[in-house]
Amino acid sequence: MASRSFHRVKLVHNPKYKRSGPKSYVYLLNRYAFKPTLEGPYFMGGRMHQQGKHGENKLIGGKATMQPILQKKLASGDVGNVTAEDQQNDSEYLCPVTIGTPGQTFNLDFDTGSADLWIFSTSLPHSTISSAGNSHTIYDPKKSSTYHATPHASWKISYGDGSSASGTVGTDNVTIGGLTIKKQTIELASHLSTEFASGVGDGLLGLAFSNINTVTPGPAATPVDNLIAQADIAKDEELFTAYLGSWRDANDPDKGESFYTFGYIDQAVLQAAGVTEPYYTPVDSSQGFWSFASASASVNGTTVPRSGNTAIADTGTTLALVDDATCKAIYDAIPGSKYDSQQQGYVFPASVTADELPVVTFAVGDQQFAVQKEDLGFADAGSGMVYGGVQSRGSMGFDILGDTFLKGIYAIFDVGNTRFGAVQRVEPTQNTQPPPA
Image (cartoon, rainbow, N blue to C red; front, side, top):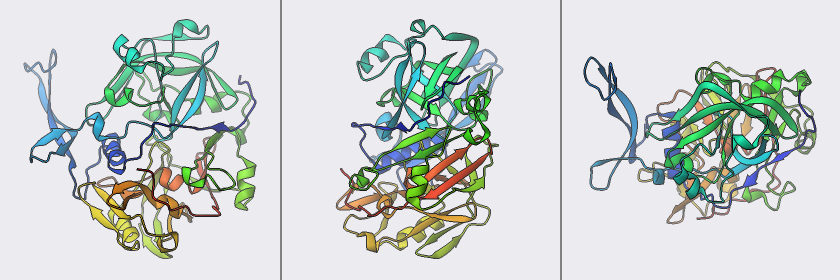
């Protein structure tokens, strides 16, 4: 059963987060392992992996396979490895979650593009815990009376640059937004590579579907799965919502607030948008993502047809990644924009005003929803230029609609009905001042 007292789960801004267009793009190259189709220093190469009868790197009786690995071109012309310094390993916003009895509060990255709930734990090496200092909450299973270890279970997340996180598995009580989920599977980190350990957050809470959860043997039921399984959750409560704000909106009525809700749709948001119901479209969850049809886009009212195209809503992604033709159409409509091969992304002058920026929309099912003009500029790119919030998806066959898009809507992730809902938000002003360097 769930203890119920639903309320907004406010996101905590990470004061140490520093925006970087190239680092955010490299993070996505690493996470989704796609091949760039536009020129730049980062590319997907290959690495020989030897597997023998007696284990890795044991040549006798084994076989060699070529594994994809993210690499970069160095100034010298040589090829180098992608390091933690090359990519964005931190989150701009974190959400408080209580785990255990008595409860310990962890600031986690809420991510609709993954399905693991992992946290820093006392199983980590002493060196990792020491370097974390007081900046992380470390979960100690011995201090929770409701924790139970799951024998012979493990988990591992690994990316194309070789970075990884892994550990053991157990269950405990998890409280999110006034709802306590009992016996929720949690993943205790016993190893974190630098890329995973360097962020401010205490771990990650995946809000995608369980078929991409990494627990073995598994997959394990996610908090979303168990939200449905709670006996006292009504059909219309089997959902969560995301309202992502921005530093740009500090003077707007919502003050740039960011929050999630679990179990209900915030009616105040709908009223502010002038609607009574969200627009819904079916979700294809077969690949674990919140995937839906997005067969067109538009730039200043001109339709960009994209027959058969799909998109995923991913709160763990800061940018929006779309096909190259749509990218070109967007930046062709922005005065002074260009593709910067050194930064592997489109940039445009910081002096461009809101009136000069195009109206850009993407289809959610059969309805178009607009990106806020202020979110078309993501980060300072130097020399009076801004790194764009919409970039190339490379070889991927679907769009990733991250925070650049999601900040323009109120997003409803309807688990019980397997559908995605959207409400177009109305911002009274468009603050297009250059992003902080």
